[in-house]
Length: 310
Image (cartoon, rainbow, N blue to C red; front, top):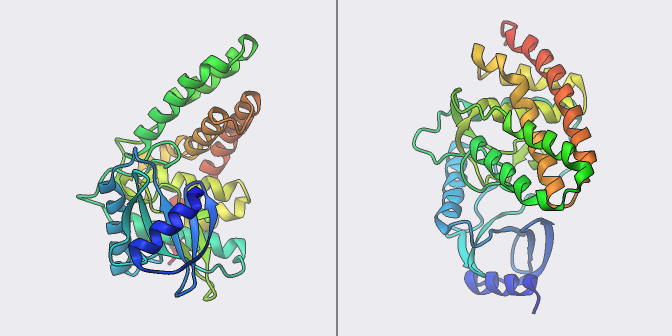
């Protein structure tokens, strides 16, 4: 029996439902089609992630539902179970409508992230780390995980590539974790890839693993990056809608470029370390990302400095 078959059998037994099929959507993420009801999403976590942490994900989804925030919803009143030594979280599958216009998506994401960041997150677990690097903590833990992956990868770096390898390591060491800046409730990956368009011309945010209390600058930094990598106009829309809810502090504005370049660098480190990107290519992409981050930050600062007209 395959792993997918075992997962289907587990869900059928756990929830007394009929499973028609599973489709992999991402690493450890499956669409679960039921013959007796609407489809679900099953997020399967490794045994290294404690059950209590996944139950924390479910608690956050319930809190978002109570607040009326457009996020995925738990699919059952007991959405967390144990499978193959790890935990599984089931949520409702969201049927995707055609993509929204880029400007519309950027504006909605900026507004929603600003709304999320108005919540201080007091009492919440530390959050904000990208879960492919660290399931716990925030930017500090994400950076530490990237550093550890690079150390493990050194043994397969040839002598002629050592200089490139050390450039990547040095860039990680210089990364600003923003730990001393303002904290709020954050989603670690608040970008279009985790925003499902609906028939009502809106977006629903998914993949809340790793959410919690963390530096808000790191969070808005990645959204600005994802917008600026597509179009300067989208940076203006994200920043203008975000500032309706949040006025960034002077220290945050000064360190904005560092926060914008941080996640792209982490992505390149991960891609190299897991064999998805050649070292030379990862260094080139990371260098280009640093240059683009400066331009995005300069543009966003001008928007954030404007007096709100709304």
